[in-house]
Length: 484
Ligand code: MLT
Ligand code: ZN
Image 1: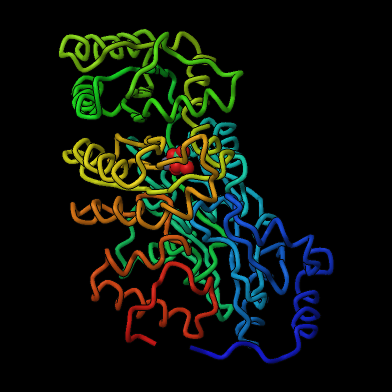
Image 2: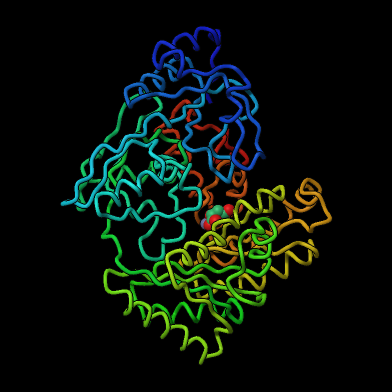
């Protein structure tokens, strides 16, 4: 490891100011606080400065400067990481580089069906720009108003439409990234076929800013669907949900865009924390599914397809009740209930976050086994279980009982419960981070679920691209015993 900067901080600050300008270099602790505390308010770091570069050249100059002086740099988009991946540690010697000023959509090519944009564009703005051009950018996640395309790329974001459209890796044709020494890598060419050696962009996608800072991207656009049909469905149990998904895919094929599982306690939590929202079904259920079909065909045809899925589900004893959206407002109301599950947990002080993916054929058994293990450890935990069942991803988030403080519950249970749940997933060849990344929260857990060869390769890549270990240090990569 390289020893960190010994030059006076005042000199580094003066040089940073010369690059980005006075207003875009923040060094007052109170003003830096929104950038040094994570979204869930679990990690409270400190920084030497927060810089807000205006363009790729400024990012390059900041990184070259920090490389020269051995100053760590923490890249940051909308600061919505659930894993503490976008904030500095408490040492106070790092520069936070936030990309929010780089928020321009550079080009929409409707013939090539691509969109080129800077990394600081919010997901919501990217989707709106695509829609204005008569296209769909299909990534859909609850934090779309604040999360940025650069963060979506660096965490390989997924969300509620992966089943149909894939995650960020699948939606990206090229990126521009600045390397730790300031050099600029670019593959902003919008090609759907390019077999000229290693696909370097994929190294940066999902590496959480540990190899380079993504500054721009070319993303795929899709046709805007002309019809949507959605239903909130009570199912017998998670096994029934898996069977219903199979039926939906058989009947509707590609039109199945989202298939979200929701446990009773997850819905109850949302309804309690947002009394203005109402339950879609008249009585309470242990397990529910939000299904959405979309197509380029006519609405009546899609409604009939949805009815067919529900009738089959009822006949086979999989479905016990269902509410069908009669309007766009109904569909939005269903999604509001689903998307509020995350923030409702944050409002209670936070839950134990496990973000598991597992083959669909094993997911229902996994939910039963993991629930039994958790309830043996924390018998009164509220089982907030939900997620993107359609692509084998379940957010398994045990939450404190109402009469126990979040601090007490998390202190007593976080480590052992997440260890049990993640251990079970690993034992079944699942992943302990389907879509939320590793950040700092899950870093050391990689020691249990990655082989020595995988860890060594990850470190070799890190050393090749970031020889001084300056980019987002102490994130993602655990240090195995015996490795300096
Ligand atoms: C979600 O699916 O709601 C997100 O991944 C966020 C979360 O699980 O907290
Ligand atoms: Zn999710």
